[in-house]
Length: 125
Image (cartoon, one colour):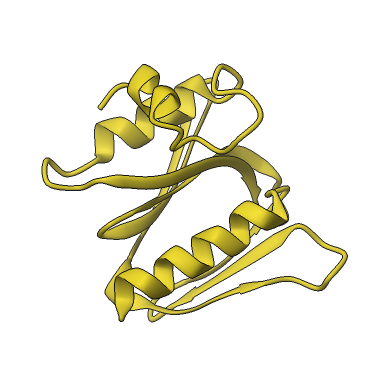
């Protein structure tokens, strides 16, 4: 898959794919050959406000970021996620809990975060 295909297929739900081109590149490089992207969106991670891309695939939830020479990637296999939840009604946060790690995604569109939660539940039934 390429960035253009991601955009043309309507899988990227962020404001501009160009803004997070490098982070998307890291995500695309980390995809497994049999893995399919369901939703990708630009966001930030936790208190550091590191900008990046959150991607839900049919196998895992991935946060990737590439800013200057620093690459960050967090993988959450779907079977290891214990809960996905929205922050308070007035915050744009998605809270990911897994067996090994907890993470708060910030600056995420609330409707897309809810869509990620719904898609996650569909995949894990």
